[in-house]
Image (cartoon, rainbow, N blue to C red; front, side, top):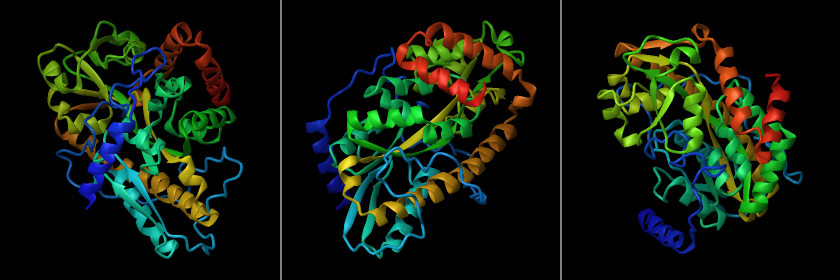
Length: 396
């Protein structure tokens, strides 16, 4: 039955989806819809065995509690649920069912049903069953599905200024980025405009890791100066080539599917991918050094169709928002931490050297990125206000 339904959704998609400009400028900075150019559904755990969920701390991870819509209720897991309206939301998710984001969605769905006496349920389609992230976003826009996850930079397809979040070291920590996206007045203006442009309500954000440099056969570096002349694979879009240049290296566009061979044959001497992708793609077999540069954060956003959201009773909204914080904020981050630690173990066991940020001249990396941003992106009126606001907000 579910397979039949997914086929019907695919037909609806083919009738409604209009391809958008994915060229650079400020449009669509990523070439794959995920910001990490791994195959859809990649989990990054090849060879690492099962991950063990880490304990969730008592402090909420930032990224949820987004309240740019003044009429929405506050998140409250203890809200009294009196509504009896039967509602089922279709949820499109591009990860595998074992991915931390997917397991958090499953836990959310189970508790949501319990808290609403079985009246509000989520029917989740995993592993890109309903199409790529951008195809799933279009399904959500036309209310064929009611909720979707997507990398926040994908929204540059519809709203140019969302592309700013692909820039290197715009933020110096994932918590800073999550806090900004969820609480900044300028960010709230962005989400209001995005809703006007797309009919999508922004519900919150989570960090699925960070892009880090890794190399083979070259002298260990501690700053951008030490990476000059090193050929590092980049995605094809100009912004991603600028990211590699800001690290001090020379960008060489290589397709993700050709990356392993390119590293093996020294077409390139390095790559920048999260620890999960480095393990999932077995790139650790042809690399020897992993740098914790953390120059770009992989931020997923949760979106709902605005008509579907507005039709929800407030008590349903309250408990759903509370579940987002509990599972997609706190549990997800704990699971991702454990998952990443497992990936580090795989890399170390394979003989890779891990260079921590304490061993890097982070100020030099920040300065190099800032110089690139000032020269190539600060003049962009769409980006400049956000760049300046982030710098002022966090005192970078």
